[in-house]
Length: 391
Image 1 (cartoon, rainbow, N blue to C red):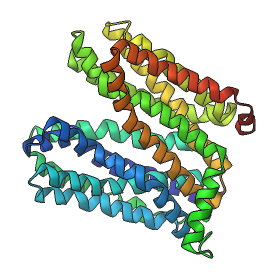
Image 2 (cartoon, helix red, strand yellow):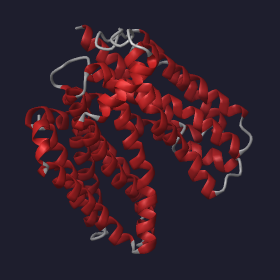
Image 3 (tube, rainbow, N blue to C red):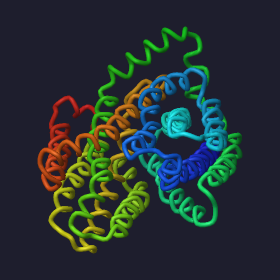
């Protein structure tokens, strides 16, 4: 019963802060940055810099949560989510906004590995299914946040919306304070020095094939997903599609991801994580080239549903795979390493997509990234040593 209460509380808290955080990211942040006079190039840096914070710090925060427990780090992360939006009132230049975004990224850098580690260690069986249900909260924030921010921007100034974001984020303190510390993380490595723990954590992560496997697969998948996010709108406009259709494409993709995540996690628990991950990767890989073969709205929206459902097969199982293979004392560190590789994919995707579009064209870009997913998934499945991880 206590495990269920903890699960509900952590899921609710994550939904609250993620929805509020996404309110401040899309469409509010670009609009606010433009009012400060940010150029197009610098605006892109402002939007992406918080991802860089997570990429650099997630392993370290995961290690510290292994040492001091998850609950206190969740409280610290919530404090960042609540307080940082109020600092936007003191911003007057794009450069100041860049710095604030860099610091604001600490909130997601903390919540990323710590919440997932907390959920993964609550119950030893049905991990992927529980992670799938938990993933609904995070994905739900990507749907609710932008829609809520868009509505608020109709009736108030961008800077005032940040105040609402801070106030909404404070509601997360209620479920966070109701959490109990996980017995898996509490005090497990306090009897060793910090230096030794860092070394042992990095050794455990680097010597666990599942960490590099899951992180590498997420890296490849996020290259594809973020290349699509960056260049599908431009491609669609170039062939005369309505921009509203592209907004619907991404919204429907996220809704599909949310709805299928529990099922994706259950399939991973039942049939093996590797198998389900590869099916998801191959599905996305086969779908991407089809985007350039149709301009019919119904066909494009069907492809959006397919991509979202394939995502739901992949991501619960990647984390579950890590949690079943790594030493439980270093779970936070392992998930942090996976998070770093995932964020790297988010950074590399738009850059690689831009290179391929400039060198070739949109069609070849989608084709080559689709092939990358298919080849990567099938190569992983055929590697002999992975047979020990097919659980």
